[in-house]
Image (cartoon, rainbow, N blue to C red; front, side, top):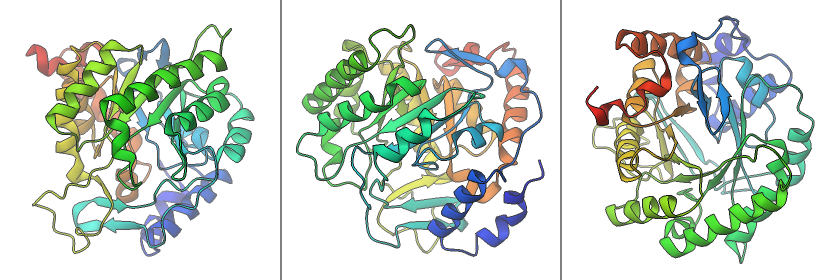
Length: 357
């Protein structure tokens, strides 16, 4: 895969992380993105929430906050793309610098604080999208200054539900004061109930209503995990993304910026996210689809996420270090691993570690 981004990757790394990211989005929006012309191996095709995915590898939220380039990223080889987090009203986020590249650890730390242009530009873009090459999801958040957090999720869902294939309520950003409280049982139950009601109002006559998913933190303690699993099983929520960035700093990290405040993503997050995918799969008896997210950077990582219980897998930070050529490589390697172990589809492999197969 030869593309301008891969050629410019060394130069982009010389720029401050946020400037490099913004320049990348601009290039992609102008049509200079890579195109993966290979056909995904049929073993990678899967169906989740009645949505068809040519492959289970997706772009996670955070890369394309304003829904400027979801289709460009799917043309690069992703099976699906998620844009956001978007908030009802514009908000600038935290002061700069707020993104940090940890090259020695193949990681990143951000404390963006859910910077967002708001629903206006976001909805205009997604309402004008043409034919998509895969499912598209909207990641919804709340404004820092809101007096009613659940109302912000309602507003976001009602605004975008008609234009998306799935919806994600981001309840777990570590860079917004008070966001951790949204994962407490009573508050989360209210958010789930009102989000589902908002979806029903937004698409009352649609034959396929977009599933509603919650994105949870990797920093939950055992009691919090138990509460969330119970709520998911008790409610009509459709799935969960496991997980968001972490405030943990694994002891093996070596980069001098490892102590910077913010949410950690990339390679050091992978073992944490993998363990949580496995745990939440067990707690929900494998009955709730999981999007595994956190530190995925190879076909082996994606395969391990799937065997641990993820129906789909997302990545973002690995692109900073490996470029878009990583996408087809992961797909090729994942297909080989599935077939080597005798699986004829991704869905057969989901949760295989829990069955001993």
